[in-house]
Image (cartoon, rainbow, N blue to C red; front, side):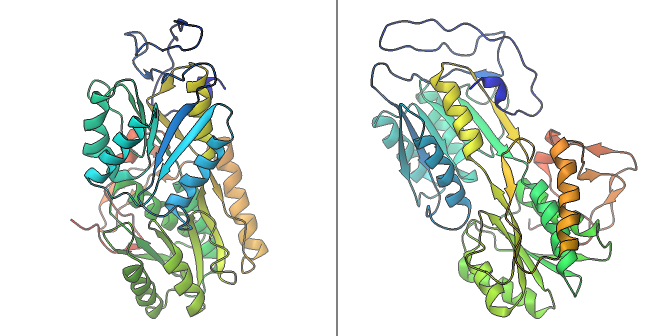
Length: 388
């Protein structure tokens, strides 16, 4: 697998340095040279029958029908690569527990570590990486800053807001009240980007549709999530979606109350067989296998890896029984534009939900624009505010 197959945003390709074979049974790859600063050095793979050991760390349970399950499915694909051994640890908190988990995996021989939760990055990955320069740390959602971030650290993420936009289209075609609901965890840029994309997708169908957002301020709060779902339903909202670690409580509540729902992270149709419309899913198998195959081949990897629908990083859940043919067509038409890479979600004229101008007419922000990874606003049509 060529390293050029890894999808990047905002980084120019440069020439690659040759790898030098040091011994018959083991080889090491030099660090980033001065002419290739946007590439990371491949981890030592070991020689002979010695496997490349890779660690995956999850903030919750591997079978949560959500964030952690999506990553575990990606890790399962890595296990199928010859010459690889995978270590996994679940239910690791976003504190020094992750440092201990990473150190334990390194002691067991891990040369590549995937700390998958947002809160694992700062300060834990950033503090530990300089102490283990022979280990590659690949983090989900972090931001690599040349000259500041350790060179043995890389970050990856997917443009799942493309799927949220499509979910918004299906939701708008399915609602009777024109009131949608979004239950969100923490108000970080990735979450705000999803909320905004969902509403913008819905507004492309009907500009009068609103999305009411409730923040729980934690990744996994099933009681708060269920209460938020019930509260939104009491307000007349008839389609729910979310960005929390495990959508199970929200899916179950929606199904029990007879309202429709769009899933997130992984396919939740089994939990809400009647009301499940579609959902935004990760396909972490793509970047994970790309990374590992590149490292095993002694190739240099990219510090910033991003990809969307056309790159295979994200995908849509299959349509549920409540989705009309009209909704399917509208969704598929928009999806086709994403697959060509020509569709722009965030473009002017656009206002925030307080009426202030965000983008002027003709202004566009394509998916690779770094400014989108610092998003701090809610667009017009979203009911609610960003917690301080």
